Image (cartoon, rainbow over all chains, first blue to last red; front, side, top):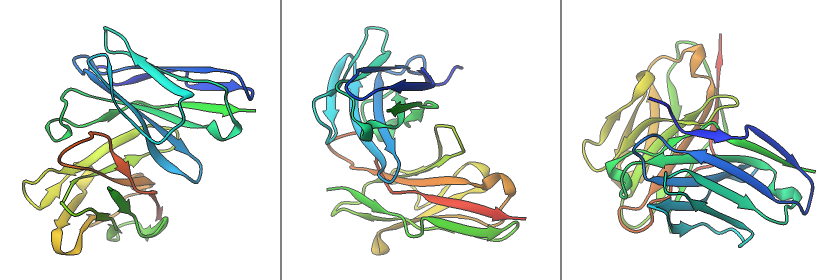
Length: 115
Length: 114
């Protein structure tokens, strides 16, 4: 069974540009989560999508946005990139709305570098 | 608010020695607790999770953790370290009600000395 996949693996952008990161969940999983792992800041929750809707949002500005498609894949968009957006962006998926019923499985991440 | 503290950003042990990675949570109601491992240039892999069943949880690769409500702790242990255990370990929590997202600790980098 294929795991969570993310693309691209690396992305280099300049300040002010937009970045689009993609995630394909494990087959059968309907929930997708996005986390940011920035140097010195640890892993922070960004967004949670389930059944095509945004269910929860972390403490990030509105220029971080995303969506979930009918096939449950997801995109994370970061507008007006800033240097501090440089980080590893991790996507996770799960098959149930309540986490205790199913684990979050993580993809390998997209490393975003903003110059 | 949920939070988790991992004591020790770096831990070094000799191969074959006991591994002990500390995690304390802060919430009025015991949350669900998780340990994840991250190998270099990879995503996170679940080691084990506590979801209100047995307080001693056994995970993959010989790791286990014990939930202690009185100490608000969920420390990760392994009796004998192996070179392949070298990685970064993250403790995470999620509340039993409300949001599903994970709140992570800052991580502990484990080095295994031959």
